[in-house]
Image (tube, rainbow over all chains, first blue to last red; front, top):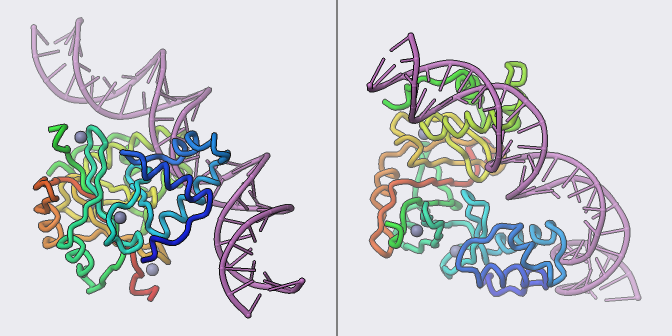
Length: 130
Length: 130
DNA sequence: AGTAAATTGTTATAATATAACACTATGTAA
DNA sequence: TTACATAGTGTTATATTATAACAATTTACT
Ligand SMILES: [Zn+2]
Ligand SMILES: [Zn+2]
Ligand SMILES: [Zn+2]
Ligand SMILES: [Zn+2]
């Protein structure tokens, strides 16, 4: 499984902080929190983020410019992602639904074209916020 | 139909340029192109964009930070959007599929929660780029 | 050891987006 | 008509997000 590939020092530092966070983290929040570990510049963060996204260990929540660790072993290396986002408390949850992924993976547009890669973000209110 | 609501001067200027564009436009590209019409500051553009998104005349392509006019009369005021994006030529097309919207509008997560609002972006290669 | 590929460190800068405040236009209702 | 509320505008400054460019270092593989 590709996700167990070794991470470099910076990648590990960045990944750890994202994985421990209960909420999506923004790049500069991460930067602020890892400066004591010797990571000083935005680029060091962004490069690690890019790589972590590429190998599917984290995902970018596009509508929030924030990053969340993948907790879904069936994620096909960041190629097919779905999230629910609470518009009040900003809680983000990765959706892992076989039905949904199957439906989207098989979806064909008007020209009969299929897309293997997608990102879906649902918005609403979480249980607590209703 | 909400979409026919009157636009203000700035909103009209911004909308016109987006509607005429064959490709999604970025905020500062828009700014550059409307400076001859008296719009001088980013905020004037962003405020118009916000409003136009809110009333569903345009959509934001989150993964590209760009804006496209809505050509889909069934769009429920920007609440449920789907796009296909070519990763080579960056062509973006709004998907209007009754089946897809129905599936997503009725989708329930593990907690039985339904979401009335979503944004879906498919990635792949368009016909020309394959 | 030799070499290519990936990663790092660093400085500077580009691109995207919002805060704050004073002012103006528009619609609605007394 | 005047008063009021709401939405939109113009402006300056600033915040936030992300990348360019280049030299140095590490890593994996022959
Ligand atoms: Zn995942
Ligand atoms: Zn919530
Ligand atoms: Zn639309
Ligand atoms: Zn293409």
